[in-house]
Length: 180
Image (cartoon, rainbow, N blue to C red; front, side, top):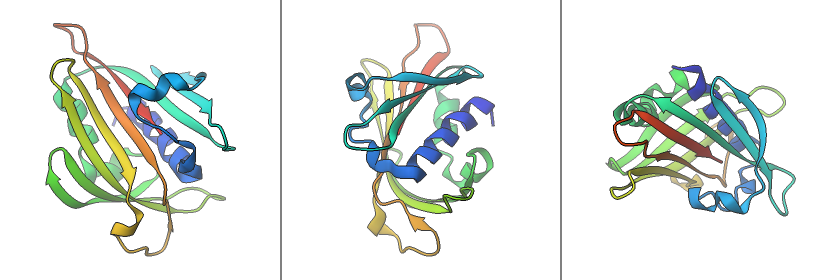
């Protein structure tokens, strides 16, 4: 798995594990309401954070431009069973319910380092496509009561999204935004 995907997903996993309550409105179009500050840039990945009113935690956004096919991007993001192979700190991930390509419920266990401790999360993932703009969005929202709690601490409130913005006509460059 390319390092840029690992960086984006590691930062997102840590942000979810620490306190997902900070993500008050994670729709991609609402990102302008935050005062985003560039926190890090490495391997073509820009990582931004912003303060959230009423929270001691920050919201996170990762942005990258990829030179690959849209099929490859969706393939990686939708390969839930292989998540532990490419998502840093993901111990396991499985699909609990697959209604269609655009709707699935996912269970994931994250093996986080001390002092945080392991966390699990049940996520409703909704994929949408806007044909006129070419924009794909995967919206993530926790559904903590859909699966029994076993050992780790359950992440009860989490929201996020991953958005692909269409590249210029005739190019394979795609901008991918991950927001938690």
